[in-house]
Length: 306
Image (cartoon, rainbow, N blue to C red):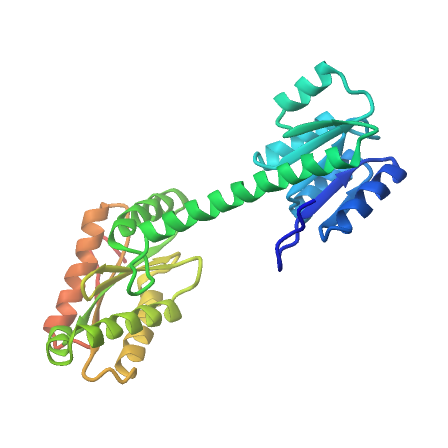
C-alpha cells in the first residue's frame, strides 16, 4: 500500500455498524499512516463526512437508520466530488449498478480480500488528490486573472464586475455603498527621478496601505490603472467612507515615501445613477482634490442625495 507523503495524512471515514469489520479496516489503514474516522449509522456518517472532510469514505449499504444508498445520495449532494467506496455482504449486479449511478467510485463485496480493498482505496485516494489539485489550480488561475501582480489588489477588469454586483445588491437590499478613487500625487516625478523599480515599490506600499484600511472579505481594493486606485466600501455611507479615506491619506503621507501623497475622491451610490455615472462622480471628485493641491479628499454629492 502506498503510504501518505511526508507531512500529508490521508483521511478515511468508515461508515459500518459491524465492530469487527470496522476494527480490521481501521487497523489496516492506520498502520500505513492514514488518519481513520468511524461512524456506525448513516446519520452519524453524513455528519462526520461534513466535519472531517475525508479523502475516501468506505460506506456499508446495510446500516441502522438510513441505509447506505440514502447516505450516499446525501453525501454526494453535499460534496459531489467526494470519493465513496460501497461495502456490502449482499453484492449483486443491481446493487453495484445502483451505487455507481448514485455516484459511488467503487463497490467491494464482503468478506473482502485485504489486498483488493487496499488497491481500491489507493485508487480512490489518488483520484481525490487529482480532484483537489485540479481545484487548487483552477482557484489559482482565477485568482491570477483578477489580481494585479504588483500590488496584490484586484485588477481593473474585476473592478467593474464587482461594482456591478454591489450596486445590484445595494438596490435590492437598500444598503449604502461608497466608492473611493485616488491617485498618487507626484508619482511621475518620483518615477522619473528615482526609476521604475523604486516607483513600483511605492505602488506596492500603497497597495498594502489599502489592505490595512479596509475590512477584509467585505470591502475590496483595486489597482485601477497606472498610479490610480479604487476601493469599494460595502454598507458604508459617505461620512464613514471619508473617515476611511482620511486614514488612508494620512498613512500614505506618513509612509516616508518622499513627497508622495494621494488625492482621494469619494462618491456614495444612489438609485438615480448607473455604474458609469457612479465611477465618474468618484473620479471627478478625485480630480477636484488634485486640482486643489493634492494630499486631500473631496466628496461628491450628486443632486437628490442627502
